[in-house]
Image: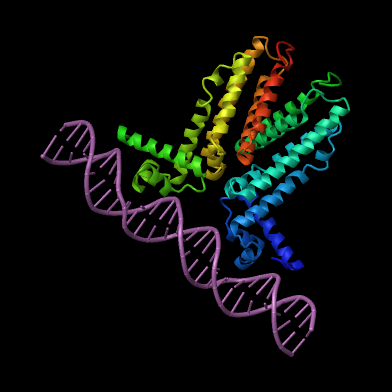
Length: 202
Length: 202
DNA sequence: CCGCGAGTGGACTTGACAGCCCAACCTAAC
DNA sequence: GTTAGGTTGGGCTGTCAAGTCCACTCGCGG
């Protein structure tokens, strides 16, 4: 692993992406190494060459890959929550993202089966949640400074609640196929931010 | 299965509860039929006698069992959301319940591994969410009628958002071990209910 | 042209688990 | 007490997937 030629790195990446695709479609439990091998046209030896830790190490790599995608898919909106229309389009993007991908939250599935308890998997998740929440909180503080949001709110707590609502909404979407809860959580969470400032629409 | 003597029913129940306990402790993936058999002092033939569908049928039964517990554990508070102190003690009970049980949400684990896509598993979840949300919405409507909650809120939407927040809070708790998100979601959700009525404390 | 190490292919080993089977037992009704 | 059927014990087997191993190829520097 120390020396990776360009070709090697490409193969490794191909394995990760193939595994991620298969997991998104069939779930973690229904994804075997052989499946990934077949779909990426690689062989067992390559798998263990690039992921000496075997299945677990691969799953962890996939989790990291998907974690990056989660936030990337919300850009640029997530980083520019500087006006209510911007919040609105971010909200739409989140809903759209999850509505589009059937009913699999890659992170949740990878996490739950890959061992939510292993320190590695945990670290990936903690980091993702932290970054996500930080970006939301930044947006809230911006709106507060601009006098557009209730200044009495604790930005971090509000961001926590909003993030929890999103997570739960996605979870329920996975279970039921409906996005109503996700939308309700987002709409109510955002409405609460502007509640302190009785103005404009609503 | 049509005829079940009292003894048979007891054995069946023992298997379900044993499986539920093992799953809570080790997760679904790490729970084999042999584990359950060993822990409940039963044999293979009994397992397949009472659960002809094998592992999947057992998991489904466990899911149903756990789903009932989820709501039962919130009683009597959940059914009596008729004053703000009552909401508060319900909120505390929810937090306490999940804080107490380590970091396993039995439902989520069973669901994700047992096949979130199978119609049976889905039905259990949909039903649980519906009942949960209905009880919350009933509480909200009660507070609205009593003039204690913002009458402008759509009770069902507010209940959806609150439920999503709870689910997400639990999920994050499972992943990180912290209950801060769950608490934030509950506190903010309840605060929003009373926002329309500027009175008493806060 | 040689050789070394990265990259590759796929057969093989190992182990674990789901599900099947039959023989034995208990219980209750008659 | 006899019988029918629910109940139980646990061995057995087929399957399947993770991980190992060895032989081979390829690319590149010397």
